[in-house]
Image (cartoon, rainbow, N blue to C red; front, side):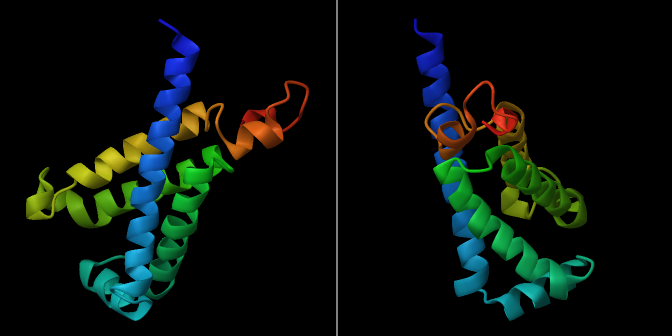
Length: 144
């Protein structure tokens, strides 16, 4: 079994699927719900500073999702997305229990864990990060 090839495949798959899901949620906040609607929804759910949080989260999820798909600044973006999901978990979903059908935290916890895993591992070989920062002697190699 070729472990590096499997690791590359696993990280690339995780990065692309997670990026797609975050980008879809960010796009939904812009197009389907609108920023004003997202702000109102956040305020109703008790999210602090909803007028600032809603557009910030929408941009982070859309741009961050695209960045994950490309594998650019993956560790930083993934860490921010993990924090975003932990905020959603504790501010909104925890009181509803586990199951998403009841408004629970199962989806946001899974998204947070997947983003945290990418923050720890980086984007992997098939990524813009690797192409830009992958040289071992680069001071930015930690980003690859």
